[in-house]
Amino acid sequence: MTISDEILMAYVDGELDDASRDEVEDAMAANPDVARRVARQKALREELRVAFDGVLNEPVPERLVSAARTAPTASPAASVTDLSSARIERRERAQRRWSLPQWSAMAASLVLGVFVGQAILRSPASSPIVARDGRLIAQDVLAEALSQRLASDPSAAAPVHLGLSFRTKSGEYCRTFVLREGAVLAGLACRQGEDWEVESVAPNEPPATTGTGYRMAGAALPLTILQAVEGRIDGEPLDADEERAARENDWR
Amino acid sequence: MGQSVERVREQIVESLPRLRRFARTIARHREDADDLVQITVERALLRFSQWRPDSPLESWMFGIMKNAWIDEVRARVRRDRVFAPEEAGEHVGEASHERQVNALSIQTAMAELPDEQRMAIGLVLVEGLSYKEAAAVLDVPIGTLTSRLARGRDALAAMLSDHEARGSSHPSPLPRGERE
Image (cartoon, rainbow over all chains, first blue to last red; front, side, top):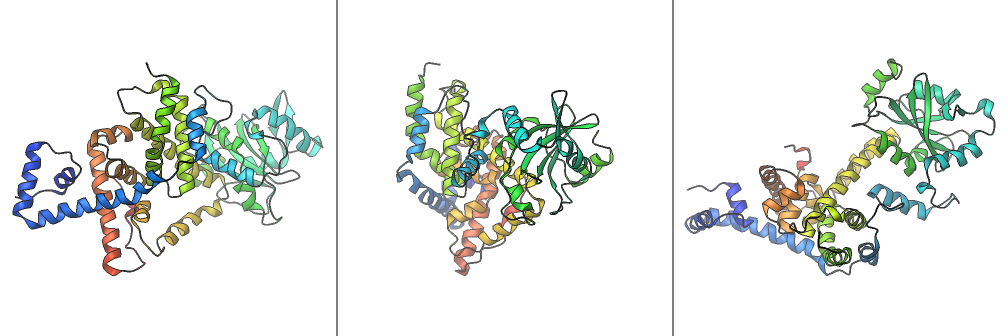
């Protein structure tokens, strides 16, 4: 009789009932080819175990033991929530340039107040972000970029770089941006009627070099902004075609 | 619930070696694997009231780890798009570079499998879970689990035997584009 790969696999994995197991073992005895296939599957299993068992004998890093013993069981203010933040934190520890401690954990509004206040609103007439009726509205070069520029068509020379565009659950369009005039800021703006309302903004790592700073500016997009995106996005970001279509429809 | 937080904490400490082993089968880099364990531990403690003691603590945490990893991969894809689009091609280059590492160990072969096959193999072949338990961790029907296992095994066997047969440093074309 022939034995399917599925049955052989289930045999090696110990998933067969007694009767089926006997059948496989009879087939192995009668047919060396079946026996060889089983041996190969067993060898693969064994090889995998040997390869990954090593970690069981390594000392467990102290930080993991301490996480198990002390990590909070109620909603924390600052805990590692995903790998990206873990990595970003690592990077920030390594190359911290901003003196404000733990700014990423601050409420976005506070970040808005501090950084927009210091860095942007210094000369309101030409500022890319203005406060109006208690909201922060993009204007000038930023508003123009949000309405016109496509993320899929980047320009290293442009003062504003667009990152990703998406729709929120309530149907508005939002876009991430990096502003490289004066202070280097990253932010998230969402379409509200005729305006782009800036919902979140945070300092970005200054570009390592001017001129080709485009890549650097994007690569350090602040956690605050990533979290704001995660909180607002519905489904997946727009692809290049959808983004173009949204622009043609004036982001409505 | 019946389980005190302190008791659960100690059970988690005891499970750390196995959690680290499963994380190594999922994440390619050691440091990522331990970060993944830390995130899993933190998330598990935050929601430990959701754990039903009739299912093994480790299986429950494997499921949390799986979700944490999927979130991470999604976040990475998104981040790559948030970042400069011109970087989009770099990961492809990285992957093909990885293919040319000299010794194709079973770990590197595992790393070439799609996430879903790697997790199925990690749970059943390395962690020794039953099909039923593994399917529950991955939140898929048993038939889906077994087909991932079969494809993962075939791909591993092909990569390894190709490597041995030719004794070369160039593994065979990879089953990366495979879909269910």
